[in-house]
Image (tube, rainbow, N blue to C red; front, side, top):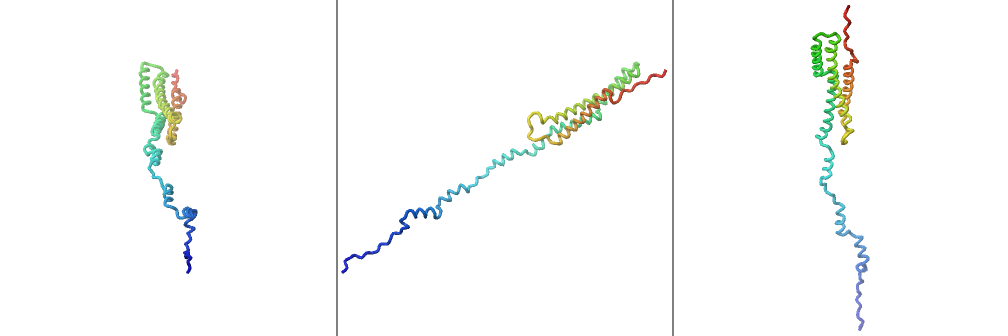
Amino acid sequence: MNTNPSKTPTPAADPEADNPADAVTEDTTGTPSEAAPAAAAPEDHVPEDDGTEDAEHDDLEPGPFTEARHGVGAGAAAVVSTALGVVALTGAWSGRVAAERETLIGQLQTSGGSSAAQQISAIYGDAWHATALVNGVFAALALLVGAFVLVRPAFGTPATRPQPAWVRAVALAGTALGTLGVLISVGMYFDLFLALPVAGAPAG
């Protein structure tokens, strides 16, 4: 009788299950864990637009009303300067009234008997000079207003936008008309263009 106990073969332990290094390798090289999408979530997050940037952009752009209002005062002054220059060259009703007044005063002064030269100077010359003086005042105003519009951007607070081109053009026209009116008025007042008539000597 065989008394030796039978030896039952013991199954060999799985080396892959007992090797901790392999377990770590599988865990690190295998399918990513559930924590990976959570870590990548902040990268996919897009910040919401709260409208602050658009509001700041709208504040920087001038509105249509502000754009239309820009240069209104300077434009009005430039138009006034040109109108005054035209009046200085063509004559105003105030100059005509002043001339008629001087004519009436001259007639009253010479009614008692005066020489021909005195009558010419009092009736015609004074009226001519009064007209030149009134036109010269209008011309000087046109020159001053036009020059002020042209040099205004160089003084005071700098403007955010340059002066419109049409404003400068109209102001320049008013300045030119005013200068021409001043020159003509000076020539009229001092009889540089046309001298007063001279009475001829009476026949003897």
